[in-house]
Image (cartoon, rainbow, N blue to C red; front, side, top):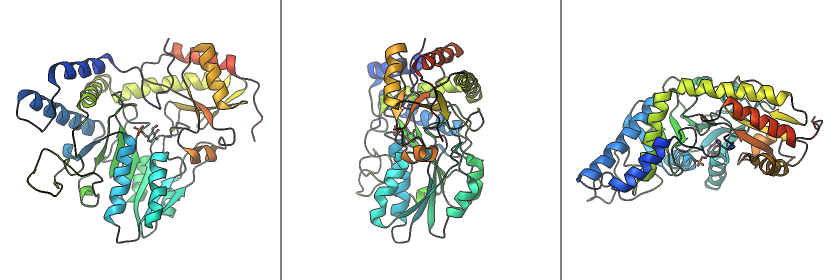
Length: 390
Ligand SMILES: Cc1ncc(COP(=O)(O)O)c(C=O)c1O
């Protein structure tokens, strides 16, 4: 039985090939890419390049060179937001985001306020967490330089209609935070008119912690300033940061042990197929929704069907979420996550902030229908009679 239900934080377990690739890199290679001409450094460069091209293929991104590796998804979102704001620093800058977004978008925007950058937080439906694309259109002003939106909510599992939002944005760059969707929800960067896509390597992509990146559409590099400067292994004679991609944004040594793991997990995902993984996730979601419906004392906050959702569920109990999460672990060994999940406005939207948040459970590709049954039974043991929530 797989008792880990915190895949929205980071996925576990990883495919065995991920662990093997990381061990093999450390035992047999250990070199830094682009920093030497010997065989091991060349191998590392090839794996780094392959990883970029696999990522771009996965989301139908136009150019491999436009995949920039970062520390994690937060780092990628900071690069995107601060990079755009910095480029337009001599103009009025306004950015649109939503109440369903994560602190990794909200906090950079908050910090930018002191430089004069303004932003609008578009509200979402309090039942489903869905943002109406026409509300995004209404929030856009002549000074809007960026629209930033979380594809999947890490609180309710709500999946936004990014294709429609992309159409709404037209020429205004759309930044999509794909932290909760990439790897198991189909994404087409070109068809959805996504200008920049931030991703963690360690959640749905099943790679290790410490991996992530930003994939940008061709041309965005002209309006995106780097936020780090340093050695790239290229054009070393010049004091200025190279303008070529990805070196413009990738200073310092790469997390190659992580990239080897990520390259292996991307191969694993390709073999399974995103559509197959998505179908499996939806089967788990269906079974979970059905199961929870029959348990009194708990309700699902957010979409009540599999429509517009991914495998992240917020549960509201009669008691404080931390108490219930602890009981779930004590009684059944279940690892869940209680609290506000770094997304305070999403909880305000859903009305779950007053209770100190929710208990979040999130599925991964290695969960089975038996695991779903197990967690539903565990929740049944932990829940008290349903609170009359207005
Ligand atoms: C919606 C969303 N965005 C961004 C992040 C940040 O990801 P990372 O931990 O890779 O920085 C998370 C992580 O939980 C998330 O759920």
